[in-house]
Length: 387
Ligand SMILES: Cc1ncc(COP(=O)(O)O)c(C=O)c1O
Image (cartoon, rainbow, N blue to C red; front, side, top):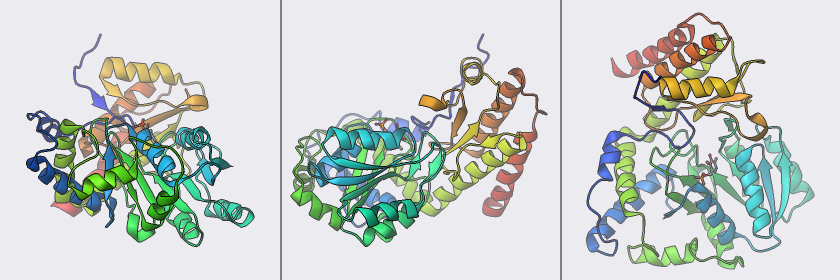
């Protein structure tokens, strides 16, 4: 029997959305070709530049994040182009599948799931194959919780003819990823993860270098066509009917981000993730990710613990939704996301539930030891920042 109705979403997408953002999407629909909508669009475009930390335009589509990944491929490359693909998890695999689907010639840097790619590994491929056209990478590989060294790899790519294409779906809005400053050529995100919105929107921005390549791209494209969107933006509109209600939510969320400020927002997620990792260590559990992202904490499940039953218990009986592993990591890891509308107290709830679940499923721990550690870290920060 369920003894709580309240659901807490700690999955690495979709994530919990702030009530004020949800309410903003309940307003009556506006026609997207009216001048009043153009004004909304202008505001959204400006604030997206703030989020991406770029002077370039940020385009969006009515699609999940994969749509923007596809858009990057079809707008920049041509059949047979060599691309380096970092595959260290489910979403690196997606880059690979997309490259194959569109007839590119992928060179895979295969890394064990849980490890971050080393910049030297990328450099080595460039030395061997100088005619590479692009590097496809995740900022945060959500399936393993690993943060890849995007800044360092961008520095390598900058010296070549290639572009770096960064899937920041579970990163942009959680930690520092300044597009212009780091020289990132293509940055992609989606609505339902780091951006703390419901699913259904994807975003993409192109550097000058990427736009020059885009002018020569020979891959077929229609909906995800950068040139079409560029023309529409010049007239303060979009090429196709946008997801109007989701854009109302986006407008509200971007305003919220600007009011909080990126620095403070990043600090919030940094403290949440730090507190979670320390709590997990206090419970004598190991962190799975070699270089952990602030977006989620990935826990190595101890031998013999039935992860599926544990996650089912938390979900069905306590209303706490964590994520398990994908593919060969099924049953081996637990993923607790920090993305979305998460307060410090939400994290204490997550850790408390984890402690209960662990005890119930044969991993005895003293109640409250994880919560205690997290509480101390969070309150230290609160005292410093707010008192
Ligand atoms: C890093 C990363 N890339 C790509 C995707 C794919 O996004 P979507 O499921 O929104 O198409 C996800 C999430 O599923 C993700 O976390």
